[in-house]
Length: 244
Image (cartoon, rainbow, N blue to C red; front, side, top):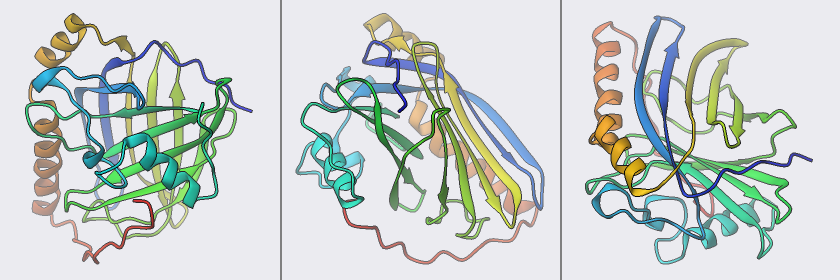
């Protein structure tokens, strides 16, 4: 069973995001950003620079984030124990706004062994989706694509995912496979740094308006692809599964 070496939390994770589209057009970009790595039972608050709320994630805004994650995993057949730890990699609400394309929740036993992970995906249409997985000893797993994210991809195929969490690196790499072809990949990788005030301010100064940046870049690159006449796939309304 996988046992993870969780760094000292809370932590800011300065790093880079990259996206690569392979077919039918090649398009790639990368940019500097940062995310947060937190224990959801001990969420930090850094004023306007960073805060976390259950309403920004899966489940009911009237319950704690811990309660919501536990309710979702229970729906998927995995019961969290009271002394289990849940570590989240996500964007914080900053300067009054948050957009978080992907949040990763590592659900750990009290011994540090990995019980499961939950991936929560948000699209730019205000919809969200979550899926549970059990990575192998290398942090790899696959999930079926069940959610409309990009307007240029159909909702079929699978995601091949690789996660890493330790004191040296927090990372997630996802490859979309359709018709046995690797058509798209996205990744985030960075090194956790204890979220002392100096580290938080430094990250915010290096990448100001970080969640606004995420929102803007998604739209800018979408417009570029549309101008290159990449066909748009019609979106059907998403019905969230129970607990999402």
